[in-house]
Length: 92
Image (cartoon, rainbow, N blue to C red; front, side):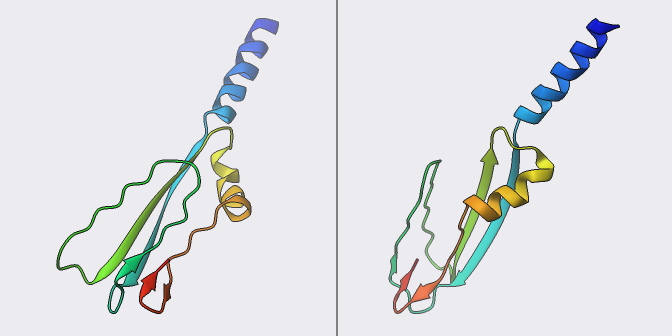
């Protein structure tokens, strides 16, 4: 019986440490923009240009280890800032 309880607790602990992920999307008209400036923290970043597009599209795949799925939105609100805005002829 004790062995079954320990296995159940270990399984719950591992599930809690597995992490969670979420995808966020941002869009901005590219009209009048001739420069893109990016301030990025840790993680992987890929920037791809494509002729003829009329907007800037950002897809952020946020993956957090050690945070349960139910706590992810709160973690993102406290620790992640995602913005895409136009200032003059630049997108930030």
